[in-house]
Image 1: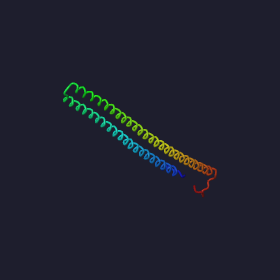
Image 2: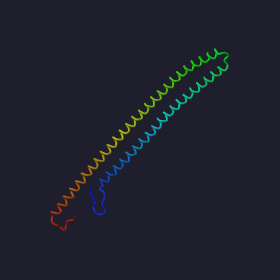
Image 3: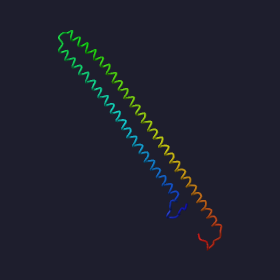
Image 4: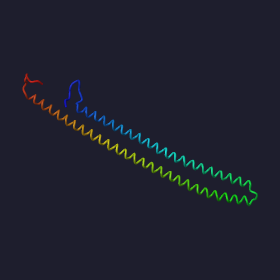
Length: 187
């Protein structure tokens, strides 16, 4: 290591190499972090789109069932209008109520099952996504720790080299002070 003192103070070569290496490692860590963030956002959007699509399907099914029930009501009203006796009205009404109660029971069971499946798949999907994110964060933490350890080792090695150079320079200066002046010696 040959430090240059004076108005043109220059960073020693070893320290410059360490600084360049650390900047490159920091850039790599930053790029890795942002790639992971982009991937996570993309995956999150995909999972949210899946949930949205499933919710849309459930809404459409619900609207279809409502439409079916309303059409059954209109069919009942048309039959009522054509009824010829009070006994026929009561029979039609009893038949309609029985069919509607059965249909509503089946529809409620179906919607409940679909909603439960949607909830379970959403929770499962989000749980898988959270686990994957946790693994990525852990890997990034490990990488950051490795970079920090490498930078610390480089700094320690540079410090030892600088200490050795300073000690050698001090010893050389001490030798020069103890020796008498020799005009033929080059300093």
